Length: 414
Image (cartoon, rainbow, N blue to C red; front, side, top):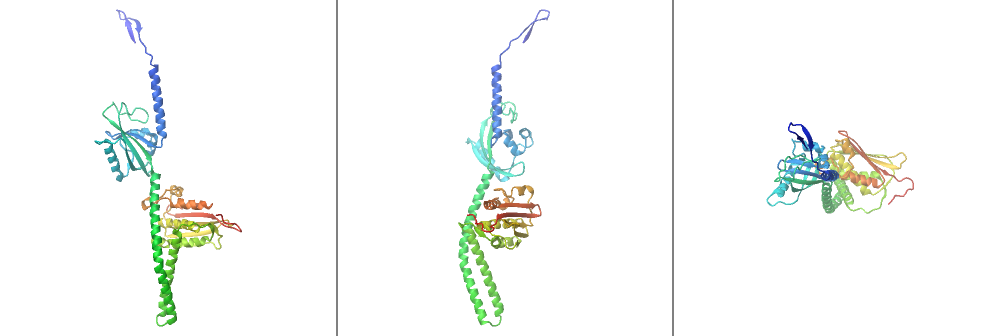
């Protein structure tokens, strides 16, 4: 638009032109709408998406899920000039990133590289993430729009690293648990073979101890009473070893038996005997207290024995010095309740809330898989029972379960 003036400088007319920009504006609005739709879709994808500038070692764009992993907003994450990489990568995994970037940008670059890292989430949990990265040339204002950083004037020679990552922590834990189960199965086979080899020498020891007792009782003589006492101790110890080996073999073998009425106190005694050596190694003692004349429970002995062994092991590993096992029945004798208490370190509210979750463990550094309590919970609920716990930091833990009891002429379910 311009002003047309006369010789004296007075405005005579305004001259202007106009251009119809409807089409370009509609195209621009449509492009913005597509961009917003793509942004929303990327925010709801299960993958962590990002663009990374290797020249400045800065994030250029991230989606909402990646920002949530860091515990920050997209804007705050991209504006943080002090932390070019927001994640805390496990030191032993840093080499994985270096090697992947070398393969991506080297003299013979690969189109896509894949690698796995352990990364600290904003809440302190270490998570396994699997990454896929590729190189994309930068075009124009690569950071314009929501979720992006303004990189300034276009630099065609620059290139961005486009990446996606998935949280594979549960998968990794499952794989570790499977490997752990395979090792346990191999150890069980080895222990069963060893037990079969040991039971025969123990039988010979028991036979000779019995013959020695008969001989001393028959012949007598000086020192016979003391020697007889020693022979009796040998016999008792050998019988105890043989009983433990038989229990271990029974526990290790596949059990196809039907559910039968069982004495819960007898099952507790078996579990205590099998864990006696383990608790002694952890300087823990077991005190058993069972209500007299408990009603029988319709269960598979081996499964409930497995539950009790796991609970006793957990109590000993919690640095408890005194483990107490109590068995009682409800006033109407319709259910039997078993509680395993310890005076160990206990659990906080968050740990207690997740104690029965599969793969959740507070002993990951000590080889815990997080499967023990979840399996126990599944066994108990399979019998229409209940399982729960009470715990306080520094005051120990009580884990209990209840099982339906047989009353009157009730028949056990198969």
